[in-house]
Length: 446
Image (tube, rainbow, N blue to C red; front, side, top):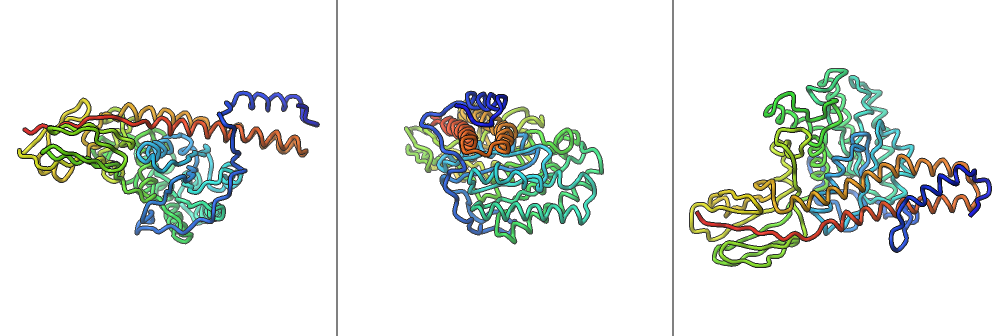
């Protein structure tokens, strides 16, 4: 095909982009051609500004938006892990759109192409770290940030998206350099308050990332020492530990109840399980289960900030969002040993009658490897999304400025559609990675 007025170099670049992107079976649907979402309904909110009930519906399209902290692809990854593996019944479409160095005002310049063209139904935002200017708070900072965030929320709301307005996070009280950490955290707290008021005024949802990070950082440093970074070794780009806190704050704000499942074992011989799990056999305190829903799994050393597991004692992730309960009835002895996977632990009869959280009590468990495979697929998908948005979409925008004929516009539309198709295929691979897990729980009276 020859496109009139299309320089050979641009033609070759376009051809390379086109041929490098895999063509998924069954063709594609371009994001811009998807039906527009209906107007966003007001969200019922709780006293803390989070959702009073779950806001996510089956088939929702979730976009995770923010600056370089989002582009780290960690809290966004943990969110997608959770929403895919722990809540597969929602069948969500998810994309992360982080951009390093960005402010809320900067995002407005790319919002139509990079966000609204995908017709999201739910959008999370996390700005403020750069908007604060890395100095003490003043009214100009607050006014500029508030105006930009209001424009962002208004535009997204008008396009039919419910917005989870995330506050900025925090800077590390030991590692942040520049102004004193307490001065910049005070600045970020002012921006948090602006976000909270905006969410309330617009009847959207507020995610208090800042307070979650400050509170958890205080507890973690008290236990592990001041040298344990929570907000990153540079003071503001968190390691995996800090991103767990961020993911927690957003997921909690979405109104999720955190119930992954309950297994009830009667020591007289029967057993039952809640939705997402199926009892295959039960006898003599031993049950075999097939599970479609996973608990969220944490990994790594208990004191390493690059480990997701190290922050778990200081953030109520397992209690609030990750409850896979075992309830034992008619235990005749005061205690019993519970074996799940390769680990065995002892519990009292009262503990077992009330229910123990397997996800919390057994960090290494039969889901660990399966969950890791899901996470690896999510990492691949989100890495492509960064390349797609920051490089390939930008190139297509440059082409579009040079081409005003119908043939050129059609070529650009085709290229955009191929990018969208690739992202859709990677998202489908993530969901396909959530395969049923068979596991056994054994209760032996002591």
